[in-house]
Length: 384
Image (cartoon, rainbow, N blue to C red; front, side):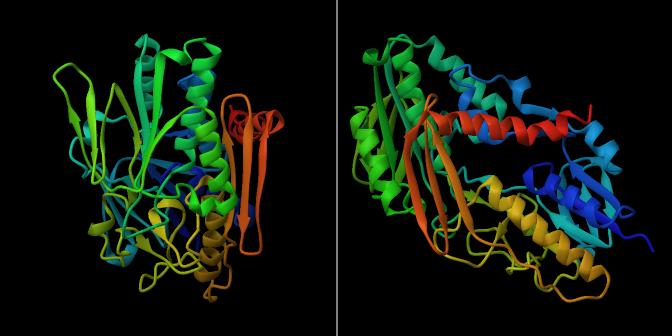
């Protein structure tokens, strides 16, 4: 009997899962559910504000890829999951399955008062373009960039892109010969931002911030973003407050909006609870990979595309074994690989359970990051 496999999402984990399924099973019936049949290469959103990338550079139409891999595409937003995972409810009908992979990604926590005044670039291309256009329209002023986490889920944060935006914006303004007209501020409730990258990376980041003349406000819990009558804003924390003309902010993450409507186990931070086999315990043939899931592991475990890919491979292997009546045996390794790019150079931070390594700024790493983008997207572009 041909297995009916449903995948929720169209990001890194979802696409890696499709390729892994096709490696092992040419006949499985795959249905992918997502609002659009497109993939956005999120790591390169940081280059849109400076004009180094455009929307068309990073948006990939997946129609040809789906056709090549014999994937049925179901347009829709998931609203619930029922029948022990066997039925996915969307705003465009229900989808039945024999096995389910949730690879939808998480969502940003938007509870901070006044957060609507901030731009969150990882929300997508439109946010990155909004940041680009706003900075282009400014002749001078103050720009504040920061991030926070999910207090109940320490791993559910995205600090790396904010360091890239911070250093990239400084580089951009210097190249445009108008850095002296702007004040840059970095803020974060953590006293040691970037701690998951390792102690060496934290020291390097703080040293670089100081070297670039960027003001810092660290170690104070966020309270609110207030709008002033003149169009500027006030950022208020428990220990300080300061004025700014633009707020670029990355809040912590939680699970997808449909997570509470699944009856699946959730972590304290609202993500779908998984084991190291990517199984959702208590739900047969149900798996999770990427930002939607909460996984056991070290306190520095990252939320990034690389980890989503590793988890997707493990999830698929266990899924296909499970459909054959075999127990789950495949796990994934924790491996943090991050090039913190500044528009002309990059710093490599690497960490696994055995070692931590930081390579100082090199132009070669900037080139390497661009090459990896080209290499990753090439397989999807070739499908056209």
